[in-house]
View 1 (cartoon, rainbow, N blue to C red):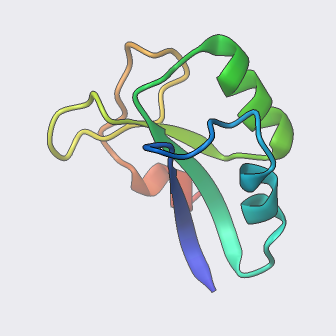
View 2: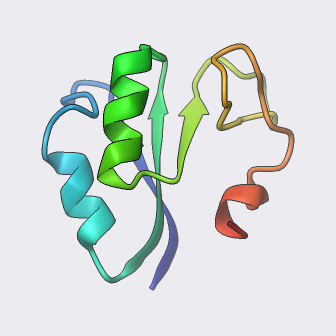
Length: 84
């Protein structure tokens, strides 16, 4: 079992493609998060509809990687994703 799967969009399709839903449906992946620079609201909405648990910003400094509810926020504790 994998606690958190990170889907890095670099050189890969964004969240509007099927790759994300394949990860979300995988019974060995407890949570799936998208790791990206792109916080287009339509892409976030698409990812959420597919069951993604969070968005990790490549723009957050150092250990402040976050899964913001808005693109400008960074969460200080990524473990919050693992804990639900």
